[in-house]
Image 1 (cartoon, rainbow, N blue to C red):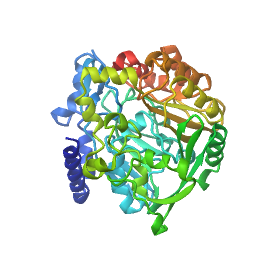
Image 2: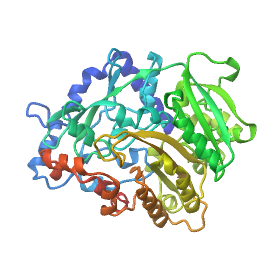
Image 3: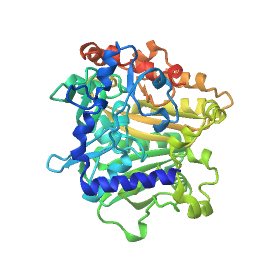
Image 4: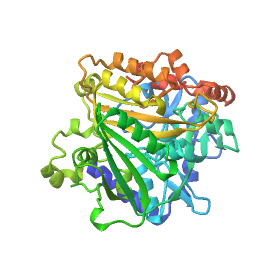
Length: 485
């Protein structure tokens, strides 16, 4: 089913790009979600909601199973569902170095479009199926984020349909409050219908240097030192394999490569990337050249390392060569076909969390993760948190380096219990002025959530935007565990 779905979408996208149909169709699609008197019956969705007395909140009609998150929010059953079927790349402006896309355009779709033209996004998160809308309204990060910030920091402008049906464009110079309030708002200020994003020149390969480390002290030091070199390392990433071992990876784009060291890691018969990287703990430091698009989606085939719990034999050479072309299975299809027993097993025995902590606290944070879950690998991704308005910003009035610690899999500690353990991780992250990515389960109280995230600008926009409070729930009411489950 996953293969057939991918095939259909590939053919459709190819036709759209060849016929250049997307830009012509976008304006009519936007009218599908705005309340204007002169447009067709479908465009009356928001108006119909108002005529019905604003009795329920609104949300997009995209089903919960279709998202990349393993969780299935059921709040959509109690809300007015608004169709926002916007999945295209609209246009590229090479003079201004921007690309304009619709919210359901995916990272795989964008790299397939941009890379042959010699362009890429400054921050391009790994998994193919991540959407632009999810990365803006939620959060997006990549191993280039220590130079460029989060995905939201690469966006130039947004086009939004508000609760009264009007269409508003916002940027740092126009409707700037809305521009800075939208990221992390989870669709509670309006419906995103397009985004204009910066693009940068791309090169053919990425020169990757692997640095194995065998002590926690070296792990933290090498990772922080290489991150702080800024543009000298365009990409910095760490995979932690135990309390005292990790591989730090440094990458830079290049058009030239040693032919004997080219490794197209994205081919289906290749080992899973995290298994490939683990080998350098034994073999020592090394350099190889990876085709750029292969690098960007290095974790897609193995869904980081979640695939080993879904297909335990999936990295065996026989499986890779015979059936590797069929993976990864679509997360959306896994969720759609997931039985209640499997769902409960995931919730009880798996943790899927990304915690964002200041770089200066990385050593202590790794100890907390080890004590609470003792689960490896862990993903380390540095990012610069700019001192800008919005839900997240540094405590001091200056930019600060943070690191995303990603934990995905089955904890090994005997005392692991989903709610209790997650609560302890949340408390630690809040204590060091960090943040929790909200695609995963959160058990924070409303007060704790307000302490972690700055709602000042967000609340101002909910007060000022027409019908906003009647139309949309607060972020907390969409992401807390009770509503999700």
